[in-house]
Length: 205
Image 1: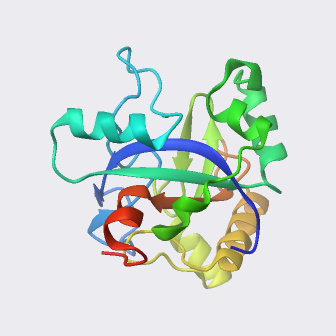
Image 2 (image 1 turned 90 degrees about the vertical axis):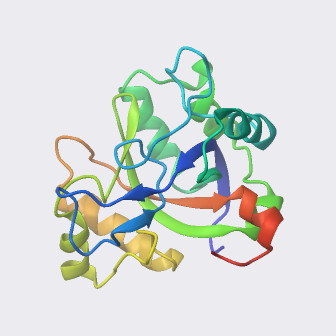
């Protein structure tokens, strides 16, 4: 990776299927995302108000306990250079580092574990809104807007493989203001399939 990645946390997710309101340029199935706008997330607690796990062990335990096929454990990384701006966005929405969770981990500057580097899937353009995360694929038209302006296209998982392309696309999307009123700051989040790192080495099924 060109930039140091901080750990936002772990999620248990199912891959998504493109719906009618999403850009037709996206793949019809197999979408990988950290946003519950487009994929199902397994809650990290009984109340269902938090989807983020602190460690891969507890995430894997919940994945197994859910008893559903097709669930994956994702580690999510945010570039260290993007973390201060992300923390400001989260604080403006009432999510402060002393509350723990994603904000706490980013404020502590926990590094994305090196063990997670075996199953990277790519970068997703995301932004924080109130209590959750939006993705560029959940706000209609943004994928095509980015393609026309920058030439950057999503791959077969709806992600961007090249980090510099992802950063360029995120910068353009932020400057465009097209995420208003949902998202004002877009950043590329690195999504890593933790299970794939152990099962397949560097393969990307």
